Image (tube, rainbow, N blue to C red; front, side, top):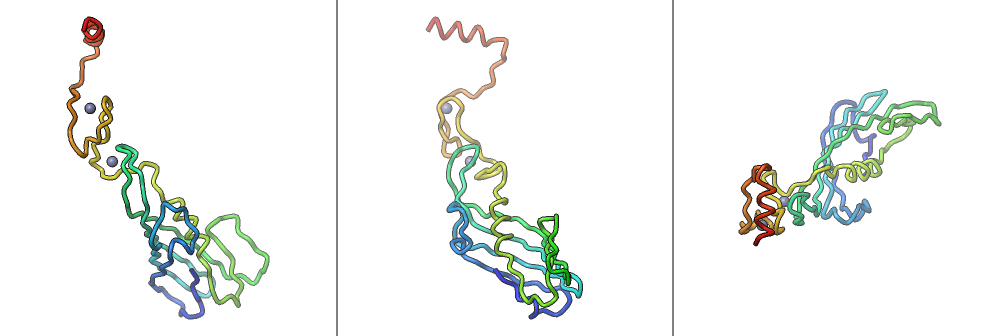
Length: 167
Ligand SMILES: [Zn+2]
Ligand SMILES: [Zn+2]
């Protein structure tokens, strides 16, 4: 995913870059294409790129364990400082140095990295996912089970256990 910076005047530019997930060699949970909405602010001394990525992925719900396909979004900012100092490297991962004669920027590595980071910690097929029955394991999104889900007052538990034993 290459941006030919010489094709752009100084100022703000918005455009889209699209790449197949196979080309980016992403994990096989991702499929179809990665779309990057780019907002680029170019000036004489620096280029700032805001990249908004959208990708489709095969996901597994943390609550009901069903697989589903979902869209994942993430955005990141890259800063390119134009410097005559050739060997300058930055401590900050998202800051790069560009030589004054450099005519293109390759954001492939960054896109790949941020796609991999974009999987949320908690994945839900739906915010209202009902999950699985803790007793019989039925997916409660698909139907009810016959288990009793009434909350039992803890003070009655010893008595319930005794009742089970007698049965
Ligand atoms: Zn679910
Ligand atoms: Zn149940």
